Image (cartoon, rainbow, N blue to C red; front, side, top):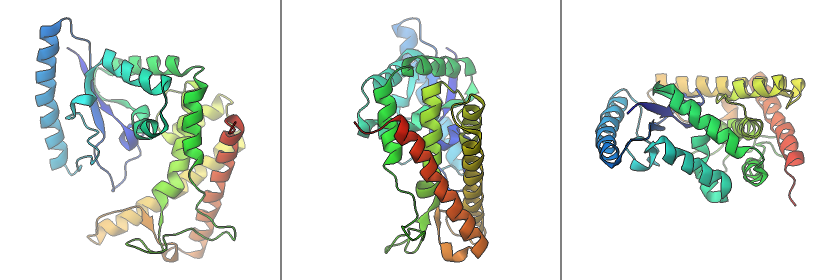
Length: 278
């Protein structure tokens, strides 16, 4: 049967950095009968194991949460994948949805891309009008906090391994990723990359041009600082991470980073107006 290797999460969004792991799955065409189904399960189990092993040898670590094609849950025919998304959209349990958001950024990596396109079309149709699902996604986004204090100082870790550092991925970039995902699902945007999503939303007049410009610049600035930070660690023989010490930045870089963080409040304001707490 035809199949497609799906890329999920940051891979699906084309936003991997030096600090990454594997997030993938397999979707294949519905088998014609039970014998073909059994044959497909046997084949793709072996195929996934070999592919994942090759990726590890290339330097891509295993996913700690086992969101990989070697997990039988994530190696399924098209009909089952449609049922997965139907469940997440129709019965949006907040905790389950938090774990499932990685799947909403899927894209075709190799194989029959039409399978991924059909799944995306199915998902967009199912989401249309499902405001409760979108409400839960939006509120999850709003649960995060802008990493600036009342006096406009960076909010950093007070103790532990990352003392005096901030997680630029979780605190800075993720709010932009979540915002773009929520609105893209709401308005049927098929793009998965965050910057491409923001541009599509602007072109579709779902967000204002000035917000698109500010959000895109803020996102790119943070991604650049994240990559520079990880590259320095990589060259020093240190395992790359996302924890930046603001003291290591120049005065200009700190000011630009604070400006980028203030854009998060604008994004949160848009979501809060769309999905106010009852």
